[in-house]
Length: 194
Image 1 (spheres, rainbow, N blue to C red):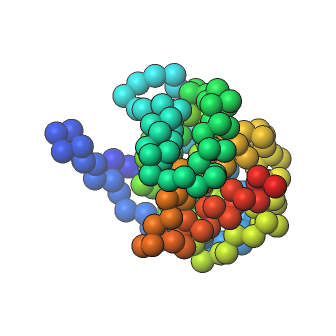
Image 2 (image 1 turned 30 degrees about the vertical axis):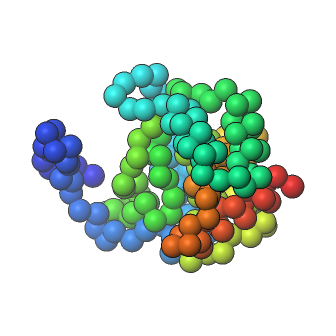
């Protein structure tokens, strides 16, 4: 995808259109995860600093704010787990990496709508666990995807840890307007905690 124009003052980019622009949510689930991992390998680039925020710093801030708003038991679990993780900050990641942000473009797949952070690939893939929206996550789907991540060379323990931390952070507090998304994320967290 090419950058056509930019306006630094407005922090705006005009990029070429994805054609046909279908997202990965319509693919067979195994294929969608394969496509995501292949696309991720193209995106994840070594970096140690720059204008992009570090995921560990952001997560610490998000969890502190969550502790103020929610007394859900998963908050204490996620906070304790995060404190033990020693987050890595060696790769530029997408930050919102899931089926609906992977679009087909002239024979290849592109990731759109990034929320870039410096983290590790294991941080980035966990949002695939509770997507696509039309597929109800189950324990079996979650475990199969975890096996796919591990087979692709990702550290399964770190993926599980990030899924618990990010799933809690994104799923709580339960918002009446976003209850379905929160329930999806917390279901995955519960299965991984068992």
